[in-house]
Length: 129
Ligand SMILES: [Zn+2]
Image 1: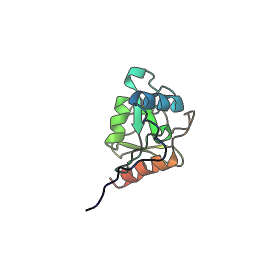
Image 2 (image 1 turned 90 degrees about the horizontal axis):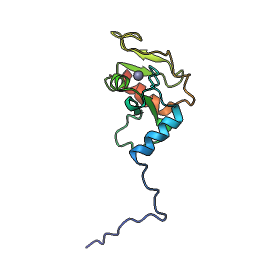
Image 3 (image 1 turned 180 degrees about the vertical axis):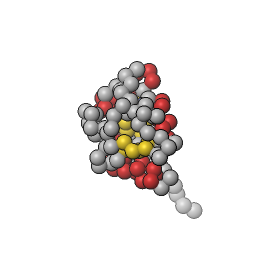
């Protein structure tokens, strides 16, 4: 007959950041514009979480980008990817920068670069797609 003890951390964990706080963190990190088309209509912008691994619950602003709905979806369906070292944008063979309304060649215009590790997980998924 095993006794089950409630797991209690030594120190109370910080309360998880609310969705609104996370959005603010990501906007502070990158500015309030789509990283790919530079759209600045804030109502249309939201954080895009880069980590692909299942079970990953990182909500660090470095693991995100600010994207508009078009570029959220383009990333979701893997029409484009960002190189984790050069930050250059790469495209599937049937689309290009113009077709996807991308206004930049890379992410070097961002005030802070996103995490290389987070971009690498996305890139790996893109390459194996
Ligand atoms: Zn965009």
